Image (cartoon, rainbow, N blue to C red; front, side):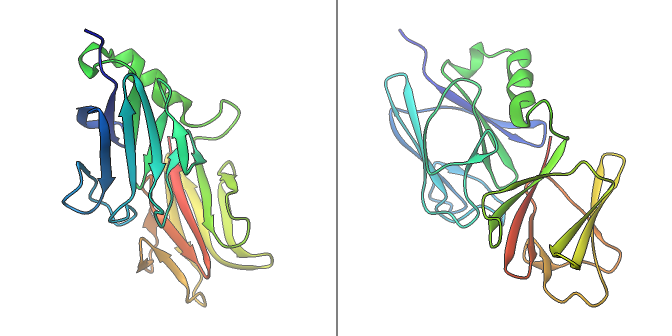
Length: 206
């Protein structure tokens, strides 16, 4: 009997669930009626689905607010290939064309290493909406300013492996996951949504 495709669900580097993909549709979202429920404010109630026929699986975004990313590229539809990483909110789904029991730790580690290109940094911002929609901003500098040119409203400060979001006193429209940023700043986690005025960005860290 042929092995079945599967996905490994990870939060940061921790594996929290492994699922064998059923023939037909597997629904993904924050709503409790979905096959795969992802509890994260950045995940839409009805976010995405994976349709499997035979050994082939196809991902479809269901018009989610923050988008679905395949290997760091926003996608509405995608024919999945072994090692593909699906980023939904803070969660990473690693696709395999074989039973999850046959996967080795090395294979999962190598798949996650493909999240960012070799010449990029270890963190990036993805512009989800607003000016420069769809652009990826590599976070290589110690400090990255956010906002209109010459009118920075917030900044990202790198401290070792941590990235801290800080706002300027006069800034009024900077949010992290829908909430105002504390006066002392907020340490970002992979998948966090940042809103600066009418621009929405998602932070990703390998």
